[in-house]
Image (cartoon, rainbow, N blue to C red; front, side, top):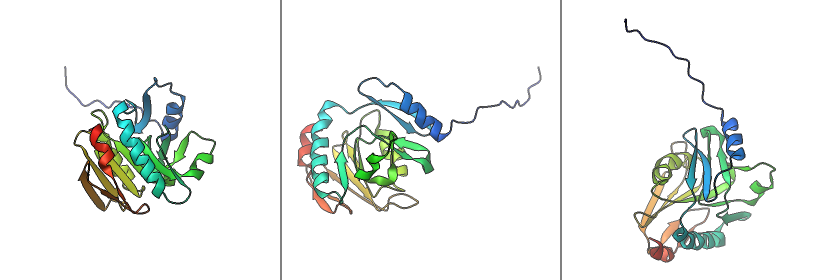
Length: 194
């Protein structure tokens, strides 16, 4: 038999809008969410129960310092990033409330003023790499609450090349949350969750 190169036809990847519709029509099991990560539909579990307290503490403090017209929540919404062909359901977000007046099921990521991801063993890589890259081009503030390392990092000042500013503190130390929030976040409530 003679060896030779063979060209195989491979199907083109599904279009972003088609993938969004597929996610919308999916019946994910209770306790799971579907996101578009690296051009694929990824199903992952919602956060563990012990994450609730730090999420609540963060949401309450962010809500008190949110820009006018913005709300802080942990609701299971997907935010679409069409330029990156991605759609994420952040663990916690602060967004312009007008983004939720649309009829669709996926909010425009341009409405976000902040996202926060609480790392888990299954989501840690995406939170620190994939999402950092995408959020870093558009979202003013990105908080990575690293539950495995017991520390929180604030990324801010987005640019076409990613965030230009970063600050990390261990749980228990205050963290400066950048503009448009501009306040010292008290992380003391995180210590019992780590």
